Each structure stands twice: as C-alpha cells, then as structure tokens.
Amino acid sequence: MLKKISRQNLIFFGGLLLFFVIVQLAISLHLLNDFWNTILRIGAVMAIVSLGLNLIYGFNGQFSLGQWGFYAIGAYTAADITYRWSNEQSSLGLTIVLFGVLLVGVAILYIRRVLSRIRGLDALSAFTIYFVASLILGIVAVYLGKLAEPVFNTVLRLLPGVVALQIVYIIAVLVAAVLAAEISFLFGLPVLTLGSDYFGIATLGFTIIVKVLLDNSDTMLGFQEMKGARGMVGIPKLTSWFWVFLFLVIVIVVMRNMLHSSYGRAIVSVREDEIAGMAMGIDVAEFKILSFVIGSLFAGLAGGLYAHINGFLHPNTFNFIKSFDPMIIIVLGGLGSMTGTLAAAFAWALLLEGVLRLVLPQGFETWRFVVYPLLLLLIMLLKSNGLFGDYELPFLRQIIPPLKKKLDPGLQTPTSTPASPSSAQKAIE
Image (cartoon, rainbow, N blue to C red):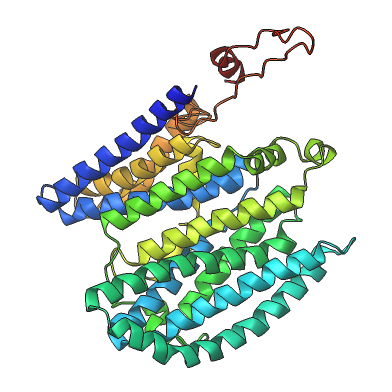
C-alpha cells in the first residue's frame, strides 16, 4: 500500500511539474504569445476560485452565489496594497491590512473559544459580538498601521526594488485572502442558519452589495486610487505563470488533505444528511462555517492573483452575472469532483476567452456567450452529473485503509482474513 501511494504521488506531482515546465518553456521561447499566456493564467485563477466553491457547494451542500464577492474583495485589497507601493512608495495599505487581519483573526479565535462555553447563544447575538470587536480592532489597526508605516518603508527600501515589490505582492495576496475569509466568517454566522435556497439568495445579495461599493469606492469609501466605476489602473502586472501555478498546487494539496481528514468526512456528511450528522455528534453549524470560510479564502486568494494579471480592475468584472461562472464550472466538471473542477476551469478559459473569441467573426465575439451555454446545455442533457461525475485522479481519490487483523489472545494467530484493499476500494466506488 505504501508503494502504491508513493507511486501515485510521484505520478501526480511529476505530471504537474512536466505541465509547468512545458508551459514555462513555451513562454520563455515565445512559442506561446501573451494572449494564450494570459488565458492559461486566468484558467488557473478560475480553478482556484471554483475549487473553493466546490468545497462549499459540491462537498458541503451549501448553495452559494457569494464566491464572486469574496473574489472581488481579494482582488481590490491586493491591488490597492501593491498600487500604493509601486506608485507612491508607501506601505500604508500593507501595514493597515496586515495589522487588521492579525488583530481580527486573533479576536475571532479568542471570542469563539469564550462563546463556545455559553449555551443557547443565538447566531445574531454572536454576530453582534464579533462585528463590534472587529470594528473596534479595525480602527486600532488603522492607527497601528500609520505608526508602523515608516518602519516598513525603511526595511523595504533597503532591498532591491524588484525584490521589495515581489515581497509586497506575496504579502498582499495572502492578507487579501485572509481578509476575505474573515469577512466570510462574519457574514456566514447569521446567514448560514438559513436554508440552502435562502442562503443562495443572501449570498447573491452580498455579491451585489460588494459590486455597488466598488462602483463608489472613490466617493463612498474614500479610496481615490480605485477610481470607482471608471476602473482601477496602474496595478503592477506581477502574477506570472510560476506564481499562479504554485498557488494552484498549494490549494489542491490543502483541499485534498482536508477532505481526506476527519474534518473532510464531517463536511461531506453535512451534505448527505444534516440530521444524521447531528445524531452522530457532528456540529453541523461548525462545519458549515468552516467550509464557507475556507472556500472564501480560496476566492480571495484567486482575486489577489487575478488583479495582477492585466493590471486593470473594473467593478463590472464582479457583477452578479459573472458570479455564475464558478457555479457553471463546478456543475460542468462534476459536483464533488476536484478533477472535474480543474479540467472544467481550464476548458472554460480556453473555450470562452480563447477559442470562441478568435474563431467567431469580427463583431460577433459576444456570441460566445450564446455558444457556451448551448454547449453546457448539451453536456447536461447527455451527462447530467458533469463531465467527470464523481471521478478523481488517483492522488486526489481517498484511499480506503486495509482492515486490521484481529489476533486471538491465546493462540496469537489471525482469527479473520481482512478484505483486500482493492476490493474495499471497488466496493466504495
């Protein structure tokens, strides 16, 4: 069994490495032009955001249309941090957000530990406590960020310009992801108590609210550099094929390991039957919020990467119509299938933004939004459970452990013959 698992790991990561090297060589040798390079990076970004939604909907069973809102939060947060450094040589955005996510994160963990001892506390009361604490700590983070800005500026300016910009970029992407996760936690506390359909409507409303705030970010929120409905320009183009591929692999491994753990089995049990899960002692609310927060973390991470691909952001990119894109991807690939999500995300980018844009006659490019749904409808009629259904690559598939041999205490000999791992695996499949 150990040899089999090691061989599967070797094949999976060897295949990923080979794919990365081939694409990187094609980019370096100019065999792949900027257009297709951008399409591949967008495909990887869509894979990350769609994996997060598949965790929420495909594995946990919570119908959510708010993924695009957290995607937008991650994009604009990371973009504002790198914009301030590259154009103004200021780390103010970095310090404020960094202190903010650290303070609020610690507060959430501490308050959650305290509230767990209080029985009968309703979700709205808990939300109020978390929200007030986060608001106060957010104000504190602004003052701390302003005090720490000169120190950060001095340290970063000691480094070569390219290195400093890369450091700011990586930190910006990571803190943007954490910020999206913390906002999803606050939003999910009261909303996850709703039924699945009502939860979907509430998350759709959240996406619309985020889009409206971005339209008025320069007037209502005071972020002049975002330029509101005119779109944000001047964002450094830092998301290379290396960075987006590295983060995609990290997300795949983290999600795979989590789903194969006891937490993952509890998450899936909520999807199958909440009542049965509660009867087995599973805290359904706990695992709903866990999957929602981690899925939103992936969305914020993807948004931070996307913001630095084209160097331009516009609120229309994050409207509620576009929020259906990751939903379509996970349905097309197969709910509850990481392999299907990865394949469908790259197929979505290559087909919709690549092939159809080039193949359709000039002036008819928007017809790709007609061709694409027709292809999706055809696939749904022919294969209703998605292209891959429940299929997973061997590395992503959960391995059923062999049964332990029971020994007779007196004779010290096996009293039963365990079922072979292959037969157990086939039975599960």
